[in-house]
Image 1: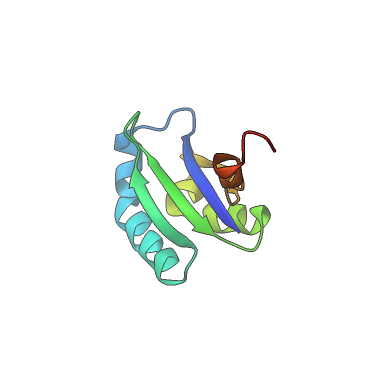
Image 2: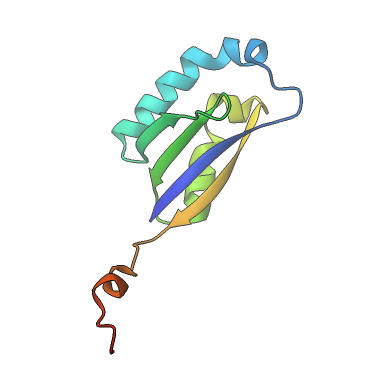
Length: 99
């Protein structure tokens, strides 16, 4: 299952509070990438943070994996997990006007 995972800064989270965890956060993200959970990761352009495209068996499996990130363990972030599926409306582009 493919999922869009958006970090949610928790009340009181600041870049200064993130800083002691960042080296571990990057190492953890790299391990999640190598294990196939993190497929893509992007910096958000609307605010500080990340958007992750993850691959997991279920939404709950993704939530469990995301809870293991150091910033989440420190209570500084939570995650919004959005399941994604294939876009099936391509056929509408090719449908006959008389169909």
